[in-house]
Image 1 (cartoon, helix red, strand yellow):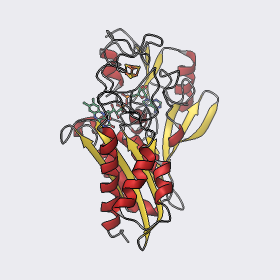
Image 2: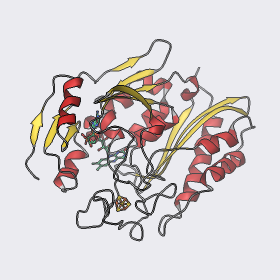
Image 3: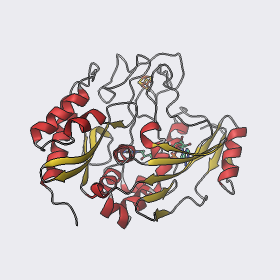
Image 4: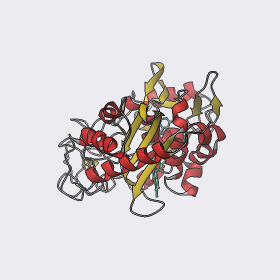
Length: 331
Ligand SMILES: Cc1cc2nc3c(=O)[nH]c(=O)nc-3n(C[C@H](O)[C@H](O)[C@H](O)COP(=O)(O)OP(=O)(O)OC[C@H]3O[C@@H](n4cnc5c(N)ncnc54)[C@H](O)[C@@H]3O)c2cc1C
Ligand code: SF4
C-alpha cells in the first residue's frame, strides 16, 4: 500500500472543504471497500478524510412518516432498526442479504451506495479497464462477463453496480442528501448513479468532493408489503447475480401501486418503470408479472456469458410479486 495522510474533520463543512482542496483525497467510512481497493492499487488516495466521527449516525423517524438515515449508520444497525423492520422490510432484507455480519457491522449507508463495481478486471491493475484507466479498453467486454450487465451498458464498460441496499432504496423512491462544495442538495436515489456511456469512470451525478450526509425514505405505507429476493452463487457472503426489490399494493386483486427495482443487471440500480406501468391498474396474476418483466427486459442485450440473467430476473420478479400478492398486509 502507498503512504497516505489521514485527517479527521470536525464537521461536514470542513470535510467538504478539505476534499475540495485536495484532488487526490477520499472519504473513509467503514473502509470495507476503499481499503481493499487501496491494497490492490486500484485506488490511490493520498489523503483519507475520516467521516466516522461526524454526527451522521442517527436514524430519525420524520414527522408525518418516513425516515432519515444518517450516512454513517452501519448496515447492521439499519437492518435491525424497528421502524425499518416494520415499515420497510424490503430494506432490512436487502441489507441482511449482503456481505457478512462482520462486514455489515462496519459498512455504512453512504459507503455502501458509493462502493465500486466488483468487475474482476477493474480490480486487477494488470488488465485493461476504462473505468480504472480511461482509454485503456475493457477486458470484460469479450472476457469473463458472466456477472456483468445486460441492460444499458456501453462498448466502453459493461460493469454492474454491486449494492443490494441501493436496489431497495431505488424501489422506495429514497432521496440522498449530499453536501457539495457549492452547498447542500437532494438527489433522488434513482438519479444518483450514472449509465457508463462514454465515461464509465464517472459513476455518479455528484460533484467532486460531495459528501453524502443522509438518505431519506418517504412515508410509503405500501412498503409494509415489500420484499427483496436475491440470487447468488452461495447462500451467504456473495454478491447478487440477480436481485429484485418489490413493493406491492393491492386493492382486492387489482394492483393499486407497485415499485420494482433490479440489481446486478446494469451500471446502476435499475428501477423497472416499464414493468410497473404494465402492472398498475390490472388484476394481479403471475402471468401478468411475467409480461411486466418481459416488457422491462425487452431491451436487454446479454453479453457472451450472461444470457441467463434475463430469464433469471424474469423468474425472480414473478416469484417476489406472487409471494407478496399472497401475503396479508401488516395492519
Ligand atoms: C467479501 C465482501 C462481500 C460483500 N458482499 C456484498 C453484498 O453481497 N452486497 C452488497 O451490497 N455489498 C457487499 N459488499 C460491499 C460492502 O457492502 C461495502 O464494501 C460497504 O457497504 C462499503 O461501505 P463502507 O462504509 O465500508 O465504505 P468505504 O469502503 O469506507 O467507502 C466506499 C466508497 O464510498 C466513499 N464514501 C464513503 N462514505 C461516503 C460519504 N458519506 N459520502 C461520500 N462518499 C463516501 C469512499 O470514499 C469510497 O469511495 C461486500 C464486501 C466484501 C468485502
Ligand atoms: S466492464 Fe467496466 S469495470 Fe469492467 S473492465 Fe470493462 S471498463 Fe473496466
